[in-house]
Length: 96
Image 1 (cartoon, rainbow, N blue to C red):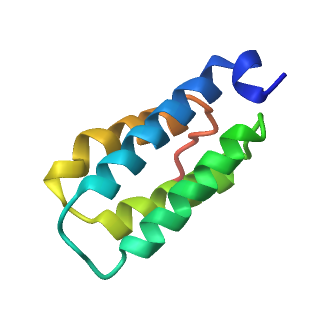
Image 2: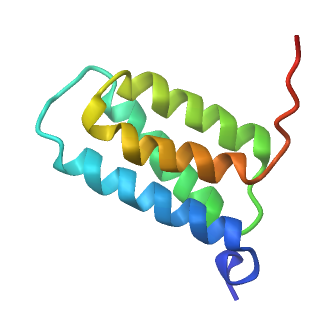
């Protein structure tokens, strides 16, 4: 049994990452950090397939993807879905 059969958060993360990967692949614009975004999305997918991803690693990958994509409005909905899926894993204590 894989991780998403046990934990609905994993299913949500996998679906969100899959959507963003598809939208990124279809996006016609080339940008300098596209490779970073693609690599980190692949890492997020691998963590989700593993079952119980580590929250700090999820967040690091999310930050790298968000930074790589920047403010591309065409991808903002899919990126927001990934962000929401990562946040479902908790561990969001704010320091300040």
